[in-house]
Image (cartoon, rainbow, N blue to C red):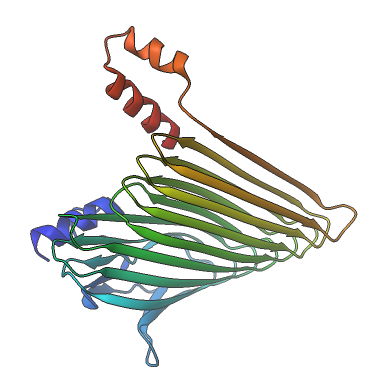
Length: 305
């Protein structure tokens, strides 16, 4: 990898060298390195772009890194990655995409990730999106995540996009069996004329399952954000979604929650808050010697932490 690709890798995966364990690095539409382990296999798909990640039952304390890097302007791709996590496994998966676009053409990555998480398995999934360049060519990312949780399975999902993506449509779909748990933490920031759409839809099908979806975002300049969430309680279950946004300058933020209970013992809650940075917060930090701009950045960094 060249220096640009190495910088993208550090931004989206905190990697400064080839990781230990299983990994698949994709750069400019081709493989830039792959490794498997005794418990984790990575198989190239034959019918379309993408890979199958197969994790054996009972695998614990192992990780998989599958970053995507685009450093050539104008590359547009759709990649399909399927994850098969065996019963009782406990693993971490680090994904994400970094785009460096210094040309005039649009660079675009659409990633469809489908998870089949076995009984009592636990997965921590970290996905980061990052863009950079001279501003002449657009950076577009459209991540789609499809989640199937079997009985007692757990997925903790952390997604972050705070720089350089001009347009994104972020789709998450999930269905949960009995006792399964889905935890989602989204962090998002837009600026300039960027647009971001987040769309969650979760079916709580099994008794005792639960979903907790939290989105924190900052909209600056003339950017636009839309947040949609749909939780369907079809069993004795608990569901919670929360959209908390800071709006600045001439930005626009819209939140559209929807809750549907199809069981008398479904407990569903939604919370939404959109507002500007509180004046007293700014004043307090400015009395400590910060400029107004520095105070704003401090507040935003703490909000998105």
